[in-house]
Length: 233
Ligand SMILES: Nc1ncnc2c1ncn2[C@@H]1O[C@H](COP(=O)(O)OP(=O)(O)O)[C@@H](O)[C@H]1O
Ligand SMILES: [Mg+2]
Image 1 (tube, rainbow, N blue to C red):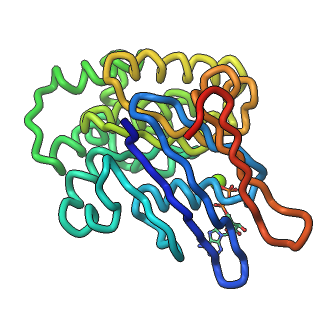
Image 2: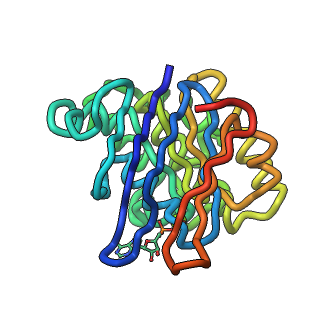
C-alpha cells in the first residue's frame, strides 16, 4: 500500500521551475530518500507533502485521499499523522521552555491524556533519562535536541515522518547513532520515513527507494531524475 502518491507534480516560484512531471509513490513502512544538490527542491517537496506549500499542478494522495480534500475535511488528523523534523530542531524547541514543558505540548494540543511517567517513557524511547526533564534546550547538545524533537512527535503516533537534513551538522558517529535510534523506534512504531539527506552512505544503506532531484545546467531550469534502485513505482 502506498502512503503517498505524487502524480505529475509541478512547482515553480515565478520563473523558477523547481520541478515538473514529478511522479513517485512512497510505500507504507518504507524508507524513501530524497537527494539532490542544494536548491533542487527537496525541502519544497517536503513542505508540499505536508500541505504547507502550494503547488502549480498535479495530484498528491495521502493514503488514497487527495491531499487538498484531506486538508479541508480532516486537517487535524492529517496534521497529527504526518510530522516533520528539521535540521535545526533547536529552532523548533522553545528556548524558554524546559524539556518537560516541550514534551507536554503535543499531549495538550491533541488532548491526549498523560502522566509524568509518559514523559519519562518518551525520553527513554530516545535514549535519554529523566534528568533531562528539567533542562533547557540550550543545556543540551545538538544530537540530544534532535532526540527531544523525535520524542515530542512520538506522542502523536505519526504514520509518516519527514526528516529534512536532520544529520547535517552532526559528526559522523552522532549521525550513525541518531539513524540507529530512528530505525529502532521505526521498528516498534511502524511509521514510514521520507528522508532528505546529503549523507550518501546512509542513503545507499537504508533507502528502499531514492528520488534524485537535480538542478539542470542546460537551461537554468530544474529537472527531476528518479532512480528506483530496488523496486519500481
Ligand atoms: N519561499 C520561496 N520563495 C521563492 N523561492 C523559493 C522559496 N523557497 C524555495 N525557493 C527556491 O526553490 C528552489 C528549491 O529550494 P529548496 O526546496 O529549499 O531546495 P533544497 O531543499 O533542495 O536545497 C530554490 O531555487 C529556492 O531558491
Ligand atoms: Mg532544504
